[in-house]
Image (tube, rainbow, N blue to C red; front, top):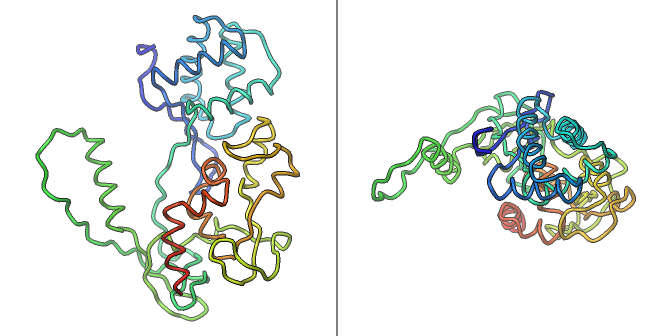
Length: 310
């Protein structure tokens, strides 16, 4: 297998238009994940060992070459085509959707985090106003870069270019390198704040009229404010779980449209916006699909500690 393709991540980059928060999927290629993939093919499709290994290798090449992105339908169809090309009999499309969902649960198909580029000067955003702790419309006036503090001296060691790059990115993140100076459009007030509190208005959660629940107590900050309904499994991902006939780990319920539409929590607008700032819709569905998980997230705890004292 090592001679068929390089080890590591076989990135399936999408050629379609995506928001800056969307993440492509990839195959996590290692001896362990390859073995698990082949085992699922033997269990679900009755493939023998030789054909299963051939499908694993061919599928990795296909997702690299064809740019299948993160669309479950396309991944399922690509797996089906690959199996047919390798001599397996055809099955119902749902079988392949289930296989893709199983590969995700076993860490064979993974999300690839794509660095979000800095917001351009002039971008319209929602930013957190320090006086009231609420998000208001603003415009990015400048990107402010903080100085990076060098780490303590360590014993020299040989590092690859990738390790050096990853270390630099971590230092920049810890140093809070990316901050923005914004001007609030309603007040004309300038303010500098960290990127965690600045959200591109094009990707901010849209609280439609049918999602507004009037005045109530926010389940995050415990303030009495106008509240909205937050889908713990975002609507954009509902189709994936309905097709797979399964839910994210730890969620008790049925993978139906009725359950998914009513499974959520009541949040004020600032908290709702911040939850969607923490991760993509896929990340929220897979790792933050319960109130306890959201409240335990480090970025949410920092936000709440800041917000509750305001």
